[in-house]
Amino acid sequence: MSKATPNDDAASLDETLANLTLVLKKKQANLEERELALERALATLQRDKAEMFGDKSSDSDVLHLNVGGDCLAVLRRTLTSVEGSMLASRFSGRWDESLEKDDAGRFFLDQPIELFRPMINFLRAKACETPLGPPVKSPHPKDYELRQDFYRMVEFYGMTPGIYPAVIELHRGEPGSAEIGSFPDCFVKSNEWLTFTVQTQGHSRDITSFEVVLGNVERMQVGWINESRYVENLSNDHRNGVGEEANSLGLDCCRGGLLVQGEFTKLEGLSIGPGSVIRCEQKGHRWLVDGKMVVSSIQSDDSMHFDNVFLPPNGHINGEEDKIIPCFSGKGHWTLSEIVLSCP
Image 1 (cartoon, rainbow, N blue to C red):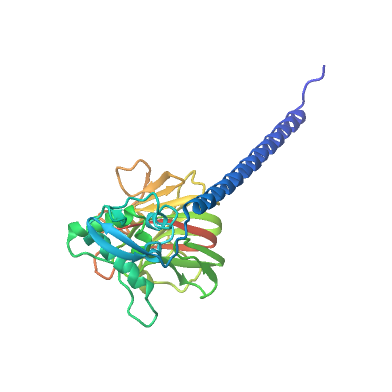
Image 2: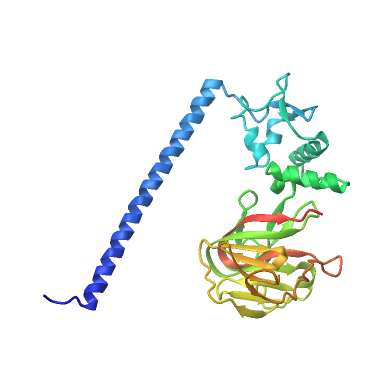
């Protein structure tokens, strides 16, 4: 009997891997078919339900609400104006028959009117906003406790991105050289290497943390800049991205390390590629990749530590003009999947 050679073993391994790949592809195809069948069944169910209950809802419907005992009349399109929110789903018209109602048939919301009304008034103002008119400002209750309750209610209804918006803006590069998506699909698609920032609009709540999902990217850098000081000290080298300039720090996804004002530190074992989720917390003090903490300036964290000379541990900076904002440099496609705002 002849003994198996290394070439035979390698061929057998290749064949096994090929068979496993084929099995996985078949299972994936079966899952996709089942998912498609479920989507079709759901669409049929929703259509049958609409026919059964006579669902003839319209954006122009006037809905009568009982908000914590106070009556309020609102257009359906006002309540559903923030796409993807719980409020938009609740009053889409599909669930009208199952929603809580008072004795008079008004939709009941167990919220204080002094919290709910400012949110509705903001949505009404946004609906008639024009380029020539004054910009609509987000609600900011004067009383601190009331303000915290308002933030909490807005977040509960999934309305934070609509009431306290943030947008991606081109910071360095040729205008029109990238496609930028706005809420609810905040993304960048660029065929050139460019730098972008995330700016809040119409309110004073700072971005404290954010999350980015990478697609196919080149020389991607994700981080933060001290906006005013960054611009004042910006070099003429357009090849420099976030972390490579003064008053900035960033995660270098290509080289697998941290950049702090031009100083690079290698993070051993860090692997970042298409599909990776990068989360930056506490304005650059803590960094996670795919749910794993990779570097932090907080001593109690169990990870590699760095000295954050960019931002003091308490998060405060000298000078009222200083503002820390998210910044990205790169080429390709990535999505801003989440932002967390301060609650001042």
